[in-house]
Image 1 (cartoon, rainbow, N blue to C red):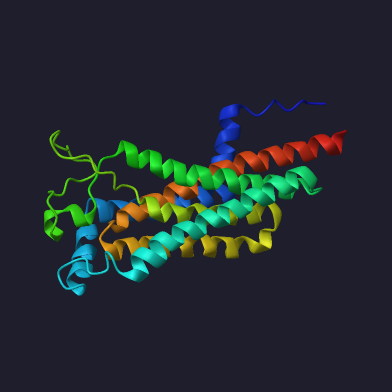
Image 2 (cartoon, one colour):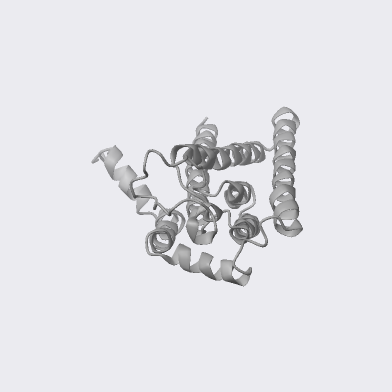
Length: 250
């Protein structure tokens, strides 16, 4: 009887990256978002959209301090997202102490870590990449010239952390609900995706109306939160599948 040689690490990695799941969850989002990001960040579409918003607001960022954008969506949305994260943390703690559903325990812990990775990853990138907000730019009544992401920034310019979109990460980090559903209740995955996209879009559009961010900033935040959630999901899924196999063979 012939013995099949073990699959090499390279072949296994290729098989994983070429799977249908990888195509729909990794390569397709990259194929959609990266060209859009390039068009908006480097192709001038950021300024084109911001110009229209600026003109619609009367040649100033009239909604910068408006109650709806600043108090309700910016401040209120941040507190609501934080409160929801605390609820998930408490649920995770409860189920790890008293719950009997191992998959639910890991799915809740997954959301807790994914939220931290999404918001923390965006905050880290903001601290490493100096970039101005639209309201800082001469074009929109500010004091700074526009310096692109890949352009040289003069050393005497003030360091402003405006890329990627930090507030939107409090919404897009909830894209992890899609993968939470895949782990525990796959039928809920589209609801989870809608909640993550909806909250991210609400926070992001509100900030664009205030002059706080360009659209490309939000695209970068959404993609980063998605990729971090995806990578963590793969690790948790692998752990659960491995544990189930070991128990089945015991």
